Length: 179
Image 1 (cartoon, one colour):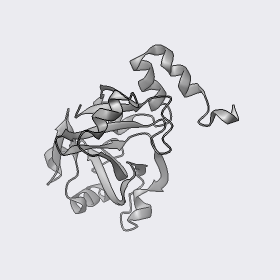
Image 2 (tube, helix red, strand yellow; image 1 turned 180 degrees about the vertical axis):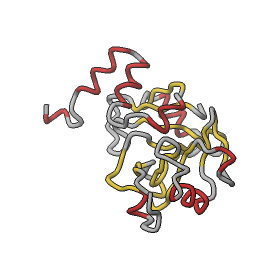
Image 3 (cartoon, one colour; image 1 turned 30 degrees about the vertical axis):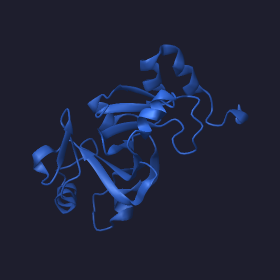
């Protein structure tokens, strides 16, 4: 499961996770943790940190937990100290001051890092129960989509990979009462 995508089932009516695609970064006996990849906010990094001149990096809602904290996944590897290796050339976290310096000096572009406010978390066994209840589909994550996937089409595209006929759900409005 760790390193996989969680794709919200089309019938999931949870107000927060409806149509979510989550990259699961941790899954162990202490619980599970991941980031919603397709909920883009209206904020950019510069809005939160005005001193970062080149901070025109979009911010995504990573989940409902610790929404006052900034998290990031990147492909900078050991070039960013204190980073933790995830999988397939992806890393999590690292020294933010170094990252800000690299951004300001043009060494990091939007295809290198994705920022999240908050994260998605589950207590031990909770995610397993939600999978049994079919709230989520699980599928192999494509590393390129994590940093560069189209947030507008990601959910439908991932549903189609599960089963082609599921793609139709992405063409239905977010609120079916408006159709």
